[in-house]
Length: 66
Image (cartoon, rainbow, N blue to C red; front, side, top):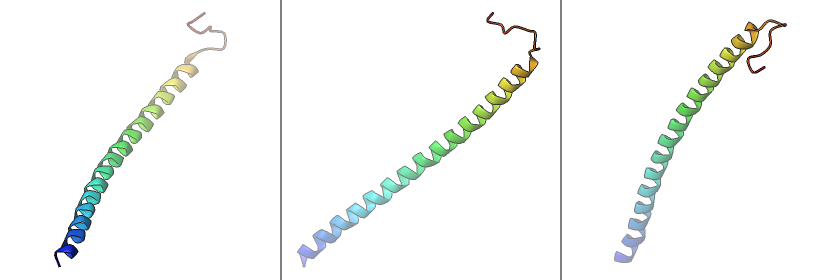
């Protein structure tokens, strides 16, 4: 009977490891989602600022690098 306990104990250890691994992956994916959301917001803000700057130039006005 002791032979049957050892494989069960190994399976329990593997399940515990997999559960911990899944929890860690969930945390990482949530953090990546937050970072992606922040980057998307920042990109939107940068595009809006760029649109405001490009609309400020007159047709006859040269860009600052000339």
